[in-house]
Length: 358
Image (cartoon, rainbow, N blue to C red):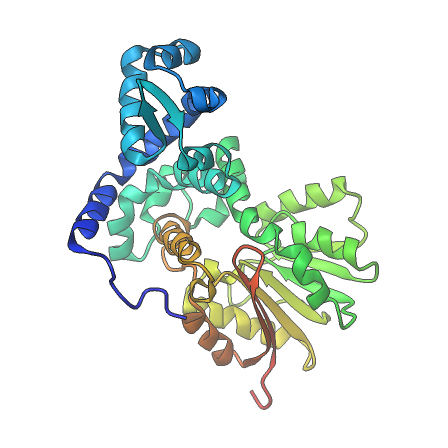
């Protein structure tokens, strides 16, 4: 289904949207200030009675002027309304305060992406993550995740996990229905999938493949959970084509991993998986494809996340459409044996097998 095939907006609506875009960075920071300074919360606590500007300023211990300019901006943004000089919260204001998805997205954009996005044009021109220098001196963000500031790490991991955590319980039954005993988890991150797997199936053993810095995080977490006897670890740089993957696994799992690479790199990684996998083995790929979403806002979030990859992560990957991604699977010698869309918030599960004579 093509969500973006027609322009149905009228000229005045289009011009209004253009102004929202022009002031986008301003309204983003105002919304955060209204939330972080407690302004939206004290207004919410007043329920339908509302509060005057003076009452709000007194409650949050901020200047009359500061609260006024933020609230007047909030009026135009639709976060609050005013009647008889009293402010009350709108539905949008409520979601800024309480919606988990909104919080994760806002924290990620502010703590990870905001400053780096100023270098977007340079990233487009060079194919390099030019904005990454705002966080640290690495070639890709994946080399530096373990070195980010604590609040940056928290925002990065919260964002990364939010879109897969609700999918994991839903896909375990699909992955392990045929009695997999040894599974290779490529890009295992903090070990969430590995831990969920061994708890789900008492007979499976997991080998996590990742960069050394990431593995250290996973090893610590797995040891704390008492699962080290069923989960192994192997440091591998998946961009190094000379580094072969270990053999002896029934299946390979990759969750929101291949979107961290360019199309050519995806094909290269999958070819190495092809070499490592037995002829009757399977690859399971969990990805949020923007052209497989039920709602336009979901595709919107994925489109904007792609810009993080361009400016900060590595400069050459994105949240892919299935139309762009699926041919990479074919080029690597696999075929899709099963596809399940609309898992959790946004995910698609692909089960791939070796193509005959590939």
